[in-house]
Length: 237
Length: 272
Image (cartoon, rainbow over all chains, first blue to last red; front, top):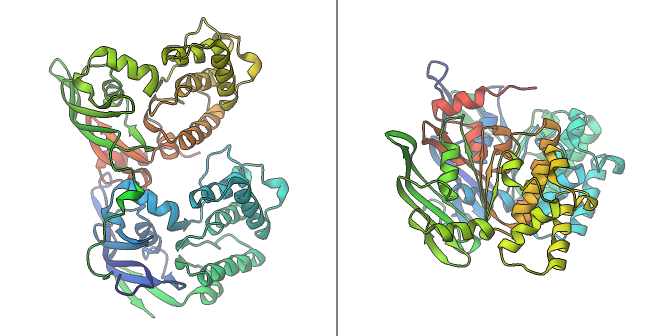
C-alpha cells in the first residue's frame, strides 16, 4: 500500500443481500464504500440502526461476501485482498493479523473460559504456560475472577460473556482489530477498562475499526468517524 | 509497495503448497440415477472440509467414493500419500486402498458399532489398528492403547472391557481413538455426533477439534448438523441432488449464504 502505515483499506465496496426465499427481495446494505485505517488509528462507523455498519464490519472480516470492491489487508510482508483469496488464506489472515470482537460469544459448551482466552495465543507462538498466565491476567483486568476460569461461559451473564469476548480479542496483539459494539452490555467500570484496552492497542500500533454505540466511548477512542446513513450514503468527518 | 496495485499473492511459503487430495469432475451414478455430479475440490494439509446437506443429497455417497469404499463412475481423485507419493484413487488397486484405510486414513462412522469390533476388548480395538499398520510388540501396543484411552477420556481401567459395555459417547470416543492411534494424515467422518445425546455431543466435538488441531491432520466431515459443521470445518460444501451448490469459508456460507437452498437450510435451523 502506498502509504506504508496503512493497515487496512477498502475500495469500492458494495453489498446487497438477495433473499431468495422471500420473493427475491434485494436489500442494499451499502454501495461503493471506501475507507482506510493506518497504524495506531481508530475509525468509528456511525449511523442509525440498519445503516449497514455491522454488515460493513463483517464484510471487512470476510464473514460476508461483498458483491464488488476490495478489502486490502497488510498481512506480514504481503497485502491480501480478502474477498478474492482462498478460504484457507482468509483463515491465515484471521489467525494472526485480523481480529474481530463481536457482541456475542460463540463457543463450544464444554471449553473453559481460561482456554477460550488462552487458545488463540498459541497462534502467536506463545508457550502454553505463558499463554495461561497472560489470559488469566487479562481476565482479572476485566473482572472475571479466578474461580470462574474453569467454567464454560455459556452460563455467564451477558456482560460477563462480553468481557470474556473482549479478553479473547485483546489478549492477542492483532495488527488490525474490528470491534462490533464491544462495550454494548458493559457497566460503566468495565466500559472504562474496555476503553483503556482499545487505547493501549492503538498505542502499540493496532489499526482499529469499530462500532461504538456509546458516545463517550466513541469520543474517547476514535480518531475519525465514518458516517453511514443507509442506502449507500456516507460522509467522513 | 503501491496501494492501488493488485494485492500481492500471499506468500506461498506460509501455506503448504500442494493439496493432500485433489478431486475433479467426480460423478457417481446408480444406473441412470446420479448420486454425485461433477464434484471438485482441493483439500489442503491440516484443513477440515465439511460436507453438508439433507439426506439424499449425495454427501455420504461422496464420502464413500473418496474413502475408496464405492467405485466412482467418472472423474479423478488425486491423493498425496505419505508412503507412496501421488496416487489416483479412482483407478488404484484394491489392496492399496486397503493399505491406506489401515494406516494413513481414518474413518469414523456414525454408528460406532460399524467402526468397532464389539466382541473384543477396547484395548484390542485400538491395538488391532496398530497391528494392521505393522506393530508387533505387545507391550508397546498396550501402552499406546492406554495412552489413547486417556486422550479420549475413557478410564484406563476399562481397557479389557468390551465396547458393548460402553455408553454411546464412550463407544464413539473409542472409535476415534482406534482411528487416530496410527496417526493418519486424512480422516473421514460420517455424522460423528449423529447418534449421540446432545449432552455428550459437545464433549465429543471439543475432543475432535482439539485432537485434529494437535495432530495437524486433514479431515472430511459429513454432517447434516450445521452447528457441528461450524465448529469442526474450516470450509464447507453444500450439496443438493448430488451437486455442490455452494462452497466457501464455513462462517461465510452459514452467515451469508447465496444459493436459495443454502438460505433455506440456514434459516430453517430451530433456535433454543
